[in-house]
Amino acid sequence: MLEIHELTRSFGDRLAVDHVSFQVPPGQLTGFVGANGAGKTTTMRMVMGLLAPTSGSVTWQGAPIVDEVRRGIGYMPEERGLYPKQQVLDQLVHMARLRGMPAGAARAEATELLGAFGLGERTKDKLEKLSLGNQQRVQVTAALMASPMALILDEPFSGLDPMAVDEMADQLRARAASGVPVLFSSHQLDLVDRLCDGLVILAGGRVVAQGTRTELESRGRLLHRLVTDSDAGWVRDLAGVTVVDVDGNRALLELAKPGLVDRVLAEAMARGSVRELAEVRPTLSEIYREVAA
Ligand code: ATP
Image (tube, rainbow, N blue to C red):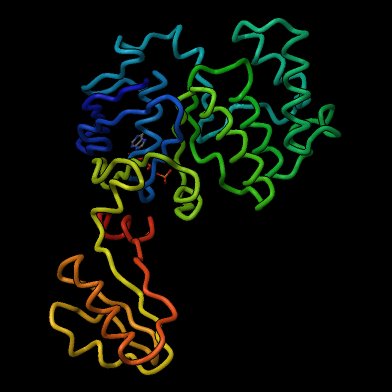
């Protein structure tokens, strides 16, 4: 488990990261979201020891993180780290060797991962000859090499086409399932919503919400969608029901207490057929807008 305790970083009199604390547990994907300038990259760079914190600490398995542990973390920096003029396969092998992998095994793993990302034919190309999205795939491959004990990826999905997003998501899920803590930042909230078990939302350098999807959902208001076979305007007269929206035979309702759902159903059935009465959970985008505004 990777734990971030009260991490703080100022640049001059600007507080970029302000007492940020959260955990990246093994076996799950943790999404790190927040507006431009919220402090995600600065936090990740402090975890990786590339930037000294003003205060606070990072622990790995309960002990202060040291460089030897950091070398075992697969990190994809925002500024990307590979050389445009070097061959794709050669530099992946070189990087894995720096992390202690024998050359033959590194070559085999790099070839397999590049194949999984659809780059099996491009291994001998210079990185700069690849499209930006394909370069991005190579950058992520570099982080995945040599069995990293944790993954910290700064916007690994940016610039990828939908197929590449799916391939990358599969790779990250597989790593998480094998017990690796995975932290990644992203502005693609629908993707984070689909992929992540845990979420950390940063705004103005502070954690404004964190938890599992279910924990965060319970912060938003729970609504009910009713679809009948006739006009649903009668819902306005129901005690304890706030009508968020009514449009013909469809209504979106907020109930003062959970038991009222039976009352709504009985009233609707007394007036005709009920096509749907379902809970509507807030989307991650809605939760995000609520807490990060
Ligand atoms: P984005 O989504 O745009 O990548 P972010 O959440 O990663 O944003 P950071 O890059 O961590 O945000 O930046 C947080 C704040 O710290 C910003 O106000 C930024 O201008 C400031 N900052 C970051 N690095 C430095 C630096 N080296 N010197 C001065 N200010 C910095």
